[in-house]
Length: 298
Image (cartoon, rainbow, N blue to C red):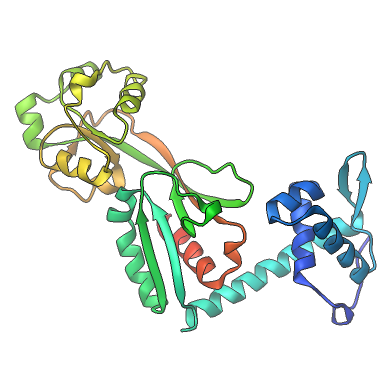
């Protein structure tokens, strides 16, 4: 069954379309209402209004579930294509227009904020010079639901349905130390040799010990005489030759004074997610920054 209608004759309301798509994606009116932060009756009325405007039935109820009718299933493909095209047009216009202005707050770990983002932000400023960027260097997860930030770069996937998360890549990290430290302390030939060396703790020492020992090491607090709640400070201690630290291979490549410890050891892998609130991504300036970071961080 195909939908044949004159779109010029329809009073088209994109709020109704968003309600329809949210219901499709979430599987029920109640879940869609939570995802869009609306009352369920309001969202139900929007879906019903779209059905009335189009003159078709979009859902049928099977038990407690809403199931798309053939007309509804066909409409999903149409409105998603239209929505994606509208977003591309908006972003293209935003990238060219000087009217893309205002504040965008980006939250990231201090290591990412210090070593990864500045070069990206320089190019972004050239593209949209009227943007105001506030970079929040915080190793705790920012509360995007309460708008502590507009966009967050995280290494864990959010669980809240109101948040949109895009996985960018799996990054790698390895153990590093300076030539001078390894010459003085002795270059390890195998994993057990690390148990006699000094480590720099970033953030939670106990958590690091647990994580490293799960790799087959046997470290104690005696190995961690130096620590910092800042990844940047901890990394600078590694670069100063005070001990061994774990760091993103991408960041460590910028420090010629360090080398990988046990280069034959498989690097550790961790994901990078780009996160924002569902409602905020309707803002032209936030969507512009979000998509720009998604491309640049890859």
